[in-house]
Image (cartoon, rainbow over all chains, first blue to last red; front, top):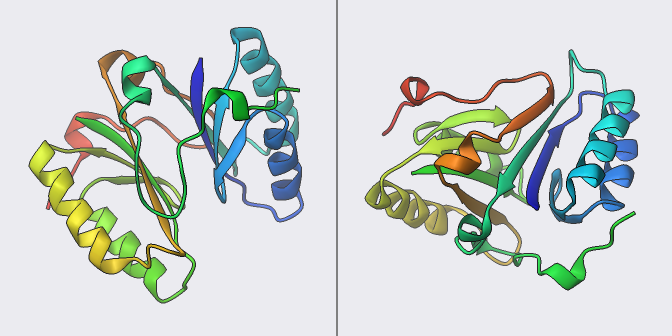
Length: 91
Length: 91
């Protein structure tokens, strides 16, 4: 499934750790926004790692699953492009 | 339609202007991520204003439309909640 994952991390020490983890599961399309193509088990694995990494009362990670139709409708103003399947590196 | 709009703005002078504009079209759910409920004309209006505001070679604004099904599937780890219809203020 295609997922858009965005995060706000309150602590500068945690932030690079989250980014590094995310880079193993998808493509960074903006500073704290990733596009990922994950199976259910990969998503659960990632979520488990994130729960151990972040401070749940101060940080937030949002997961938006996009179906085929919604994926066709992604638009961009300015710099950037939509991620295509073959560009994904999965851990 | 429900939209997730995220942005990366390269210049600290443009950034607050984009945030202020976005706050008139939806709800800020993370530092540079907004959830919006917009008609097609409202979306076109917002995109027109953004095109005049940002530097297209250095900034980026991404628009992800989510259908009803995808909207039911939004999940969050940590701080935050999913936006509900009545919470939207439209310009």
